Length: 184
Image 1 (cartoon, rainbow, N blue to C red):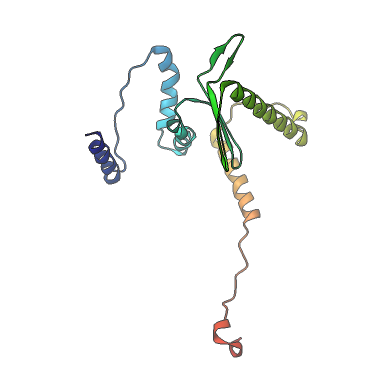
Image 2 (cartoon, rainbow, N blue to C red):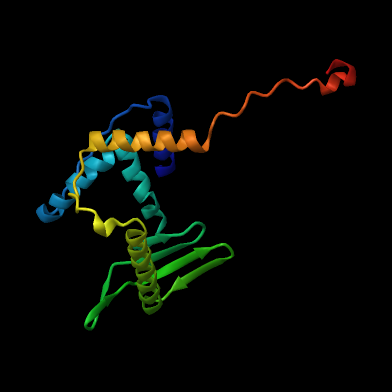
């Protein structure tokens, strides 16, 4: 029966694209205080909602909850939780490396060591960026942004970048090469 229900749900989604459902759940108060704002953001029918949903879509693919996912151009390292008490510190339960031609599971110690190396590389890269762009000489800004104003400015930067990098090509005159040399 579950297969039949899933098929009907997909058919209903196809027919009624704006179909709404009511979700009901019970949670511990402390957990709900954290979860409800996240759920509201995930369910938002907007670009932000879509972005939040895409950022966690991989969660359903993993057997364990990911603590960190470090992505390169073609390679990915996933560090799996939950963290486990290991004496005076905590270790992840494991990890996974995916790279062209390589898929490797990491034990807790390997995952922790690789995670630390990746975090050190990220920290070095951020520090180098700060120095290259003279950010330490600029006054500190507030962490919060005015979304409307900041998004408008960001879209203007993107439009300018697109126009600089993808200029309209010169109009090409039609080729008469099929008609032979006399019609040129």
